Length: 492
Image (cartoon, rainbow, N blue to C red):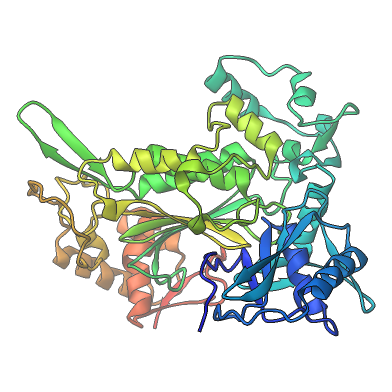
């Protein structure tokens, strides 16, 4: 049995067809539309799905039919190339469809007008939000350059202007808003402008941050050690996201003869780069979606809505040669001016390089990048997971405080371990729990419980209230509204 193995069958780039379906051409015209709306691809006729070469008996007639039906039913007509080739004595047709610049490319026939994209090995109808993006792309426009009906004079930009001066040493002049693409000539804000105002104009400009207790997600209240929701302009989101990660990042250290060598869980510069990329390259057209930061015992994950802008899958790309293709060029240019990022498309490489500089780094801790047509995810591995930390700051909860399990860590070079890890006595924690249960015979707020213990409300919630609820000893008065300001706790 002869097989066709010359072209690797990347699901998003190649489609095999046993024959040229004439009675139902939509079965393969969907792929033509999808390839043109994405990164391009090849349709190989005369080969089965398992790569067996079966050939075409009427290759010339099939070739004429393919060319004619594409011009009749795909609008606008994409750029394509059709060639015949002989393999194992049998004739095949290879239809190369190039990535189009006049998106979206529609299938128009049978009373339908539909555009398609590739998802895995299938061609599926384009979702509404993606269709809007394709329309903008076909018009050589971007979402962040669209003009809103909001006037700049009605909003303030204090944080943006202060940050710009701090990072560049230059003041923002009134005319800069137009030259930077934040307003039009009439003073209306562009979408980029709305994302930099002090007031939270764009609803889905949000970041959800959670520090989970363990290795998997659970209930936000019971299984989360800390969670925050931030909504506001892009600089506000970046700074608060950095602070959240920094708060929950520990630093292991060891002494040498002349110095102290520190090794944090994650490289701060790499995390900042990933957060900037998430804010700059995310899809703001996708309503009801936001950036998520999930921190676990062994890793940090940063999720952003919207896959690679050019339609590729990051896991199929060479990370060292990814071109700079920007979904939001106005915002990207501005963040470049403020020296948050570079234009050269080197962000992923910088994340890898900065992580590799950490003390004790091995290839096992290399950041992982994964994308789908609808999202992008960066995974940082905790370099200190499963090790003993050096002397801890007594103001911070330690592993022992939180009852976190120590799982088997990845292989790492053996390094001297510092002794003296701070641990809060278990007896003291148990006394605090008993005090809380006695105090909560009547419903109490978290603030009231914290004041009774002379402690911090957030720390009391995650260290005492959450475990007591999980054990069934305490309950919430509003279990379906865990973030309600009226939430109270009462002994079960």
